[in-house]
Image (cartoon, rainbow, N blue to C red; front, side, top):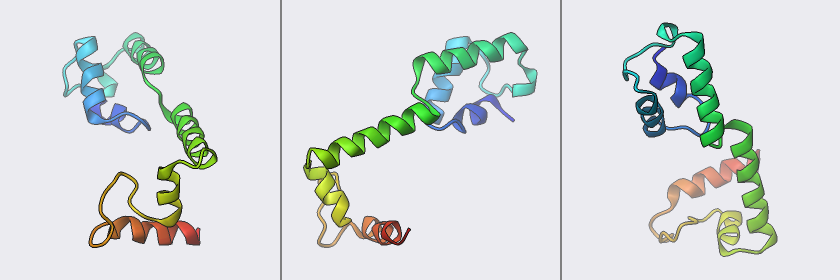
Length: 108
């Protein structure tokens, strides 16, 4: 598995951040995980844990953010509860995707 795809599979990291990490360590973008030595792997893991919010930390922060929106009765929370687009899009002709996803969200 390539290092880029390995980093990209971590929740909260994108391809762009994967390439930034690779450039930070001066590695080739086509390097495989099996080609790295143990010390490099540990250094990359430490760097990711120190510089980025990933996995459970990020999920926890997202939950807290949504709780804050609902408790503070923010406009975004009203739009989200009604299944409408949250970021200011028009909803007469557009917003079909979020409406479909909302129906699925309510069932589960």
